[in-house]
Image (cartoon, rainbow, N blue to C red):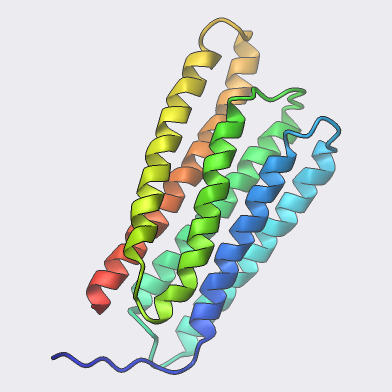
Length: 205
């Protein structure tokens, strides 16, 4: 039987869990985009702050990797996982920024389906990160994320069909497509996180 030495320092797990919690907060801001009385400029600033918080957590993880002799699992995997979690927030920040910069007055209700997928993916991911300590009970996580990503793909295609149905003028289509693409990229990034967790779990088993 192969034995593995695992350092007792829980900092890496705590930071990865914090990064995932940052994403839960980010998806809540996405939900607020659909409120009728929302201050879009203020919301964009709050999302930008959330993105900065996520960046800082990522930097802490990287600094920790660079100064720790023995890491709980491969350094490259820690780098990749931290970077992918950060990517999700970057895409969500991009979506909110486009809505604000383009001064999109009303978002198609279909976009709420994408945001719902993102919110559920963030919650599932936040629940899974602490389980990296033991590498147990993670399979349901990546299976659920894969299911959500497929749901997101279906939603994405339906939104595109609506955008190009003639219901919107050409300029509005271009603006909304940037938002939709950013949200889709965030959903895909969640799947990349889950795929990386699966690879780590297989290596460490």
